[in-house]
Image (cartoon, rainbow, N blue to C red; front, side):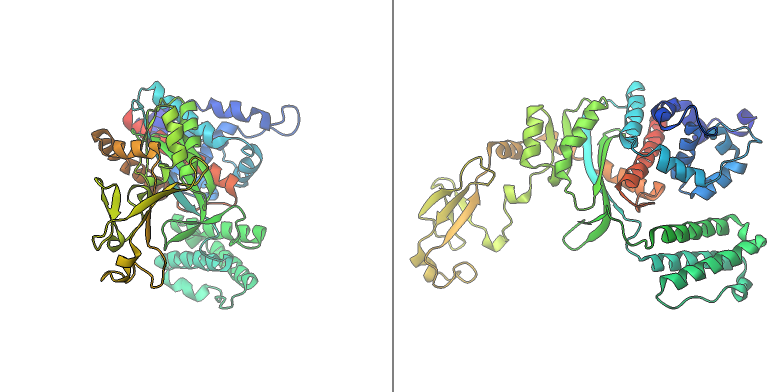
Length: 467
């Protein structure tokens, strides 16, 4: 029957044919009691339910409901056409009891990478690294604001099918009281559920289920605006977010080879060694790392040099040209080995400050003739009246920085740098197609689980496309 109903080009059929999910059973075997209690649902089927949630971005209730009538879902889940479905609460228990304390993120990435290597999809020896942010579930709204937003969406959907239903709606809560808003949300839920002609409409049902989940989560956690593991990170000087970061390594073929989830305030660069190590453990032979300036730190350059790996990441501007305004820049005279000030005066002496290899940068300080500075027409903003000296300091570049600066100008560097856009597109796919823009639950453990399922889905889809 499934051969007739589910076409060969169906995504779920392709995934079933691509991967043997028995590795899930083997991984979770120790999570079940073998001689006590009632027979458990098959862990492979439960895992597939979670995968369907990510692929189609739907709630627990809706993935179970759709598996009741969608034959492609039944086929993917290994169900008989007439077989009954699980209760949605079973998915919550599966996540909390069976997947707890499993390194699901690395397990799923390792599995998809091994498939890609086996099928000779990954041929490049480069990994592209970047970090993408995920907003905490509690940000930027309070529990009350989220309840109101969910209620608003539900009402709007109902009115699109029956404008006259407004007359039967409960009176809205206008007080900033979470308990009153919860009471209103429950009243709204009951009002719509009683009207089967409206609540049975799929679009209404989806919004109703989202409101239900929000009500339950608010009651369980008291407030949705507190996520203990989430932290404030910065996308730029003027832009911040509250949530998590997923640090990602990806091959040039756009297969994610490693991922590490952290709170939002963590820096990108320090995670490169871990991403590189995981990628190598997963079977990737790396000779080049492609990233932005965050990954060109001295420690990363040392690590990759030791492994004869090139870093295609531009050095921080403070190393190459300094953070000086154009009008403050002094010109270097190579013949005199001195700097010339904007007014054309040559420094009269220089000295080296700071100790080598003690964690702080050494600097060359150039001193100018103070008597010339006192009468200089460009002294405003350059020379402070009454100062006893005028100097200009430049950080001394380490050998490793000098080598990287030369490498930045090579054709190889410029050609490989063109591949960096691919990881930006992958981040967009995770967020736009698989709901990775916002956390679906609380805590870094749940964030890792969400990342594991989303990355597993995008890797499978990419492998199918390239197969």
